Image (cartoon, rainbow, N blue to C red; front, side, top):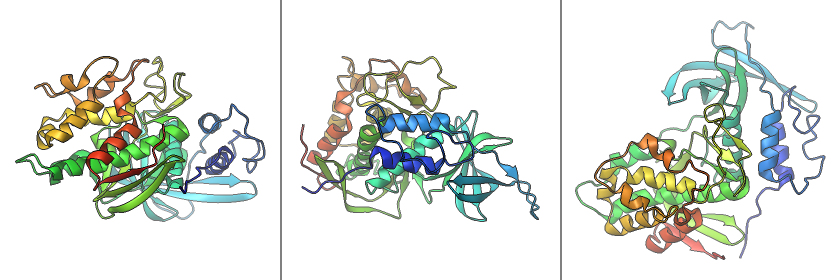
Amino acid sequence: METFKPPGANEFREFFTKFLSSPTSTATGAPGSASSAPISRDQSVPYILAALIRAYEPPKLVRDLSGHTELNSYSYTRRFGQETSTIGLEFGGFADKGNYGMLYYSLRNGYGSYLLKTGLRSLKEEACLQQAAYYILGAYGLDWAVPQVYDIIEHPRYGVCFTMDNVEPVLTFGDYLISYMKWKHQCRENDIMVFEIVAQLATYILILEAQLGLNHRDLKLNNVLMVKEEPLENVVVHCSPHVKLKITASVRAVLIDFGFACIGELDRPRLLLSANEFLPSMVDMCPKVGRDMFLIFANLWNVRAFRRALTPGAGLLFKRWLTDVRGKDWALWLSSDIDKELTQTYNMVNNASFQAPWSRPIGVLTDIAAAYPEILQLESVVG
């Protein structure tokens, strides 16, 4: 079977060294020497990424006074080797607000539709992990899966913030289901609306865990966007040398908000966590078995109306994925009559021994392929 070879460690380091290029970037020596040193056994892609992020010092924005009258016009200089470029950023109106940050519209070099994200803390780690996810998934042909990051800079008012693609038009996962599901009776059409998105998320998480050791750690309904104008039709993805899948879906899923993401290895403390300032004392393994998919399943199953709109067969899949988590039947707990607060779902996975083996991405994909072949076809699964 034809397989896809993911980017190697040297290629990944070269990409990120150039992406983070600035006069103060010293992660791998002189700018332009990203691939000059060999990758040792200890320098896996997660270790390289963690080292680059820690060493990077975002350039400071300077107010642009060259004939501009806009109060929110800034610029900064990027350098890579002998190349120098000046990037102009104009910050526009308010776009959206989250629990820990704000989004503003932005122009880049006078054109384009971008978003500027600011936060209550430095967003350096979040921006780099989002860009790493964008790069890795793009290498697998999934270039829509995560918004691209363009600038990681220090604003005089907002601190370290970043610009990224403005994905539009969109609905969140939850709003999409509310808008289009048939609520009067259970039907397979409702199942397909849910599982065609779940299949895409499981594909993303499978690749990100394998290549980056990354857990999103905040996978919930409002951190997944739906792009309706670009459906998927038999899109082939080589997830590994042993796994090839073909996805068909009416919408494309976009993964956002890496503010709590982490990278690391199984059974070892994380290498890097986006939310260090918020969770400085938490000992957290990254990745944890089944963590991300468990979170989105718990988030969905918490919503009583969604549960009742799915067929009994779909409900059995959810209960399978949410069962045998550290010996406790979470599915029974989640299916109680009391709707849980969605913001509390992370409390289920915040101990070091958490595992959800039935929510492993490859297991989820296998289950969906067996039950809903019109959504997903899976080939050559070994081990």
